[in-house]
Every structure is written in C-alpha cells, then in structure tokens.
Image (tube, rainbow, N blue to C red; front, side, top):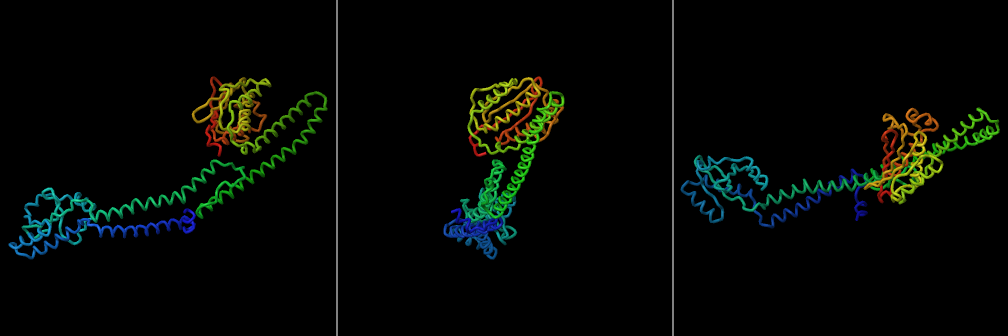
Length: 441
C-alpha cells in the first residue's frame, strides 16, 4: 500500500503537501455531498424556516384588517404553526440578550436574511418577533425542541472537517514525510561512528530527504578520508622516527658510563614514550570494538592487579562480579590511563565500582594535588597539558591520556566528570549506561 502511494505521490515535500491539500479538498467535497443528501432525505427541523414563515404571515396580517386577523391565526394553528399577536407593551420589558441570541444563532445556524425581526424568550419559550404596527407584534413560537437541526448538522460537519480532520491529515503527512525521516537521521548521527565504513544515512524518502541524506553521507566520507590521511601521515612519521632512535640508543649504550650517556638514553626513552602515546591515540580499535556483555568488575580488577604486581599502590573496591555492556579492551585502556596518571602524581590510587539502576559507575580517586577547577573543562582536549596542576612529571607526555579516556567513554555512550577528592586529590567518575539497547550504538 505504501509503495502504491509513493508511486503516485509527487517526490518532493512541496509537491506532496500540495497533493495532500488537493486530496483533502476532494474528500471534503465528496463527503459534504453525502451529508447534504442525508440532510435532504432525513426530516430534520430547520430553525431558519421559522423566521421566513413568520415574515410571510406578518406580511399577510399587515394587509388584513384587525378584525380578520384571528381567522388567519386560526388557519395557521390548524396547520400546526404557533402564532400569537401580542401587544408591544407585553414584550417591551423583556431584555434582548445579544450574547444569548448570538449563541443560539451560531449553534443552530439560523439565517434571518432580510427579515426584520428578533428572537426573544417569552414565557420560557423562544419566539421570533416581528412588528405588525405601532401597537402589536407577531410572535412565532417555533424553535425546534431538538438541537439536531439541519443547520447544526451542516455546520458541525464543515467545522469538523476544517478544524479537526484537515489539520490531523496535514499533521500525519508531516510526521510521515518530514518528522520520521529527520528522527531517523538524528538517531543515525547519534549512534554511528565516523570510522564505520557502512552507509550511515539511508537515502530514502522525498527528494529533499534523499538530498539531505546524500549530502551528509558525502560529508561523512570526506571527514573519514581526512582523518585517515592524517592518521596515516602521523603513523608514518612516528614509524620513521623509530629507526634513527634505535640506532641512537645502540650507540649510546656502547658509550662509557657517564652523565652524557645517561642523558642521551633518558631523552631517547622520552621520545619513544611520546611516539607510543601518539600511536595509541591514533589507534582506531576503540571505535571499531563492539559492545558486548562482559564482567566489568573483572576488567577493573585485572587493571589494578597489573599495576599492583609492579609495585604501584593501586587498589580495587567493589563487587567481585558485575555484568554490563562495555568494550572490554577499550575500558581497560581508559582505566589504565587514569591509574597511570594517578601513580605519577599521587601516593595511592583507588578504583571503585558501584551499580546503579541504569548505569555502572566507576570512580578512580587519588590523593595527589588534583586539577584546578579553571582547567578541568580543557583537560580532555588532545595535547592539552597543565604542568602546574600535576607537577613536573606532566611534562613527559603529549597530554593525550585523558583525551583517550574521554573518547572511550563517549564510545560507550557514557559520561565522565572530574571532582575534588577529600582531603586532597582528584576523583574521576565514569557512568557507563548498562542497558541491552546499547548493542546497536
């Protein structure tokens, strides 16, 4: 059915909107004809006929002598019409409520046309009153007892179509042609990775939506190509640096022991650390690794054990087992980076794990100098370093450790925050969403 509709509808949103309006007008005209036929074939009272009937009888009475008017009223009475001649003094004290009359007129669709009269409530009944002469008026008591009049049915139908059916139809079209495709594109942007080679945005729908998806796919391809070229260049440079560094290390090791040999080996080691840090940052296995259900507690315990085995004061606090959705290798790298930063600047590092209703919370705390509040917003930026906050040892890196951690947490769809530890130090809090629907992230 949807394919049939798409085949005959215009391909652009503008054309589809015009087609929907045109179809709606045709449907209203068709259904309106059916309603008119129903009104003609069903005996519904017509309130507007009262005014016309009163005008005809009033015209006859105005041309009839006063003594003969009774016969005309009697004839009308036998025909089922309730007319009365009342003195003007009797109705002069009756207030004419404009709001009340307009409400009745709007609801029952009473059209007085050129009839010079008014509706009044006399003795608890509505009557259409027309002046006969200076002393008398003609009152026609003929308001239908039922609210279901022909005018009400006709007016209700057209008002319903104009203010309910047509807006609902346009709203459904907007959801189908505009809102849903935009939601799909927004969801694709939020869940997919730039490095993913698959097509991100489905080129399907109206001409405008297809054009938007195609433009986004082309932009994504250009961004991915730019990132790949940059990564390839930096990897090549880093790799080419290793050969002369290796030769330099071998030559330095053949030198006699002394301050120059020690300084050269220290500088070579420093450069190798910088190269390794850069290559680690450029590795794309963080984004390509898939989410899987794993034991988060086991991942954290393994990282802490690796540091403890080489003498670093890193401890674990939390449950022995906690299943959740994560990228185990990437998560281990993130926690290892945080622990590595901690042992450089603090005496003790504690990795804690707690489970909440919707997330697994990991905290890495230390008792070091901490990070000033003024620079916390920038510490996750690549190549940013704040030497004064962490001490002289921070000069031995490119400032990519926390940036790698932030990328990994973002790849999990999680959140990372920096807080002060008490009495001193820094606490890094990571919240990892713990839900099965993250498999598609």
